[in-house]
Amino acid sequence: QQQVKQSPQSLIVQKGGISIINCAYENTAFDYFPWYQQFPGKGPALLIAIRPDVSEKKEGRFTISFNKSAKQFSLHIMDSQPGDSATYFCAASPSGTYKYIFGTGTRLKVLA
Amino acid sequence: KAGVTQTPRYLIKTRGQQVTLSCSPISGHRSVSWYQQTPGQGLQFLFEYFSETQRNKGNFPGRFSGRQFSNSRSEMNVSTLELGDSALYLCASSLGLFGAYTEAFFGQGTRLTVV
Image (cartoon, rainbow over all chains, first blue to last red; front, top):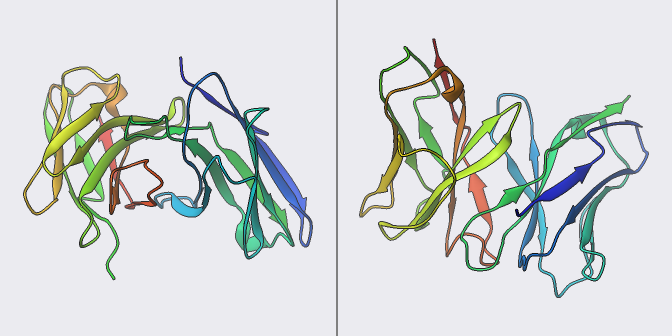
């Protein structure tokens, strides 16, 4: 069964610190890996996405690192701010399926 | 540019009833997907439409159905509602084929409560 495993389930970081969220997938050809941020009562908002032919992508304070051989990818939030406190979901799209498989989510809290 | 619009935002229905949810994608987007979000199961794929054709369907019972109109607007219907259908139903749209290196944008969802 196709799965994307996300860790940690929750994360507390001091303001200005680095938040790191990890995801891993198994035995499936995924060809697109987006990350979404969701605030309570809102829909998920696209943060950043990466293709498997790229090892790293940076947009502002957000960086995705992708390790194809290990089937792992991670989100780094640099200089974390209290406004970053939200739930973050990684996702992966199996080739030709027109869908995302989501991780279980990481609830991030950034302390002021 | 307007985002993905879902109506209604909140809905309370009784077991056994049916419900129709609506989604208007971002202007110009032709792909619409639906997801169910619950605390226990997370985000689960329901179905995806492109140019009025359903291209994929998730592992949900036949009570869950959907369609897409020629203007790319989409509806999903749940018949014979069960308590377990209580969830946030999310619609996402993308310019091209969903998942094919194409950014997808979600609406705020419809919160369905079945009592």
